[in-house]
Length: 186
Image 1 (cartoon, one colour):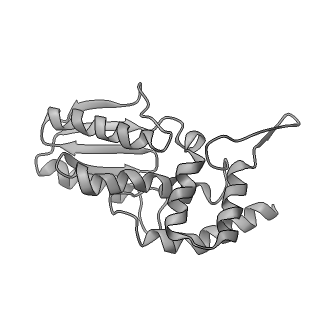
Image 2: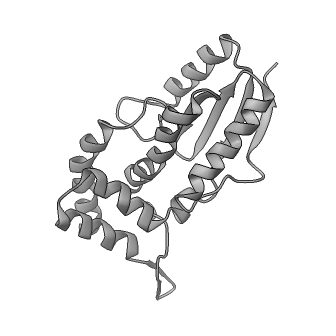
Image 3: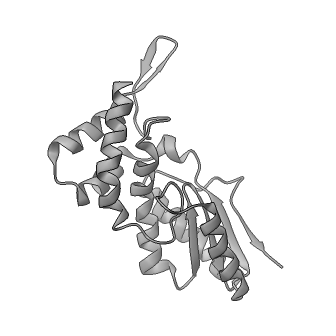
């Protein structure tokens, strides 16, 4: 219980720091944003003719985020070594199942109050890459570990898939092969 309270307090302190940098394309687990906002962005973008869609899911996102990549992203905005040490400790704490503690090689603490923020910090790398390289391909709308890219052509949707996969690989993540597809909305 004490760990959850400290994690919630850390989230309250860290969230405004990272919110200042988060891209508007990210809607999941963010203050004053919801799935309804994401859907409205999709609706207006489709109405402007972007009818080819990369519909993607990040496979086991919360379980597989690279600790090194996440700490590197946290270190870009957090200079307090004690806070970084605390965050690193939570990431490495392990999972207690059946009386055995399993070491954590990757991922965020399951069910913790800070996990959604940590996932958004890591996935902000994708949002930033999209802002610099992906906008020519289509409009990214991300809700936590699910995303859509609304494109004008099928070719751009395929290129968007390749770009997303490349960026996610730097985080130790990959697109779910069975839950990722390219569709035409009409």
